[in-house]
Amino acid sequence: MILREKKKAFRKEIKEIIWDIPDKMTRSASFLSKMLMDKRFQMAKVIMSYSSLSDEVQLQEFNEFVFKNKTLLLPRINGEHIEVVAYNGEWEQEESYGILEPTGAIFKDISKIDLIIVPGLAFDKDNNRIGRGKAYYDRFLPNTQAVKIGVCFAEQYVDLLPAGEQDVRMNDVICV
Image (tube, rainbow, N blue to C red; front, side, top):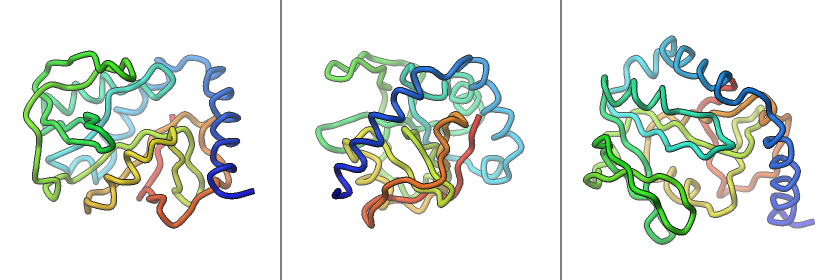
């Protein structure tokens, strides 16, 4: 089985597991406290996070904290690529995926990003990540030197993922 087929089969399996995860909101709340203890977070001035989908670790509280205390950047999809937006406190509904995307100015100097919080369907013990299959983050992450921290529920953390050379490893994974 080729890598693409292995990933597709894994995505189907993990999505079923994710939908059955209990107490997503309650468990998500621990992410902020874990990050407050993290030296990389404490030292970071410019942090890129994301707007959570309903099946992901909910980062509203974390994002609000960062917005009030540091520079918060969020991704916005533009065609096949992520563009980074300096969050200004406002959102708009994105049409094709139905997710909230930030309004605000494009943040062009991605070399200034200190830390990126990266979503994923699953992560493994080697810090590999598998996303939703559109490769937005796999195209974006190699262009930055920022610390990359994956975030997931414990049920999404596995021993081994199907991964290839183009897949970007995280520096760390935090499970809630």
